[in-house]
Length: 384
Image (cartoon, rainbow, N blue to C red):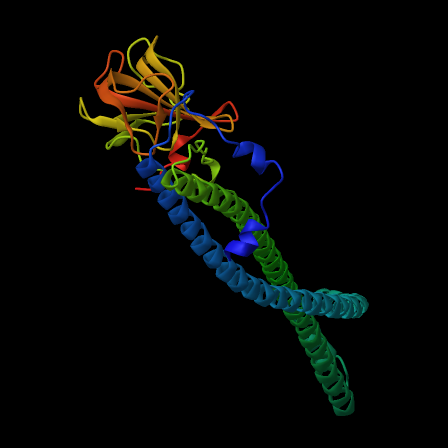
């Protein structure tokens, strides 16, 4: 793993890890150098472990992505089948509509005869059929009239019954048609929703794989940088053991993102980008405020050189540590300062003691600057 990661070291790394003297003529402490080497080696192992975890996660997500792609293909097929069903349903609707129109035409053709019969019955009145029966003069006339009246009444009853059946059939056909349309529309909508959900799932997994790959690349780069720094620190220890005067090594800060020890214990009282809310203060903070007991030791989060250690308006006593590569950490509201400008400090070196925030309780102001820009320190400290 280390050989693979070392191969990713970028050409500009040599400049970033160029030898820096903390103070002109200052000789590195062997114990401090050895401690730095151990810290760098531990971080390398942590990055390698994370790289293995990311590789395993990538394989798992790739498997999930393949399963989702298969599901996506199935949903595409389901949408196709649903559309075919809708097409068949539309054809059935067309046929039913044609039948409906035919029934309507049949109903309309029956209306004139029925109307004539009803008008005739109306004209005859209640005694119309009686007059027809008894209007003849002979028994033969009565018999013929009786048969005619019976046939007429039967025909009228049949026509009325047929008319009612036609209307009932039209109503049932309309209800069935409406139910079929609603069912087809619901099936098509469900198929479209399932397809959209499958597309979103595939896109999300693809984005996750891209994030994992990007993180693996960053890990490889960081591990390569640290490996080079570790080898230089080991060479420095060997030089010290041989009595030669080595040159201090700058350990890059970027590979320790999310792994820095907190500068002081306590809860975060003011977060990055927030205002403290104290009287007269409205500006947002470029760092965080950690609520800590007065006189609590404040320690450097990473090796570097003290570039400022003095009072600063709005921040009380302020210490700025230069970690090289245009990266800095700032420690404000200090009651006492334990270092001077130009001092070389290691991770964990005491810089001062917690003092009081302006018009507020005891607190530590902590800020991290990367490439001259303030970043959220919480993202650089160990989770807790």
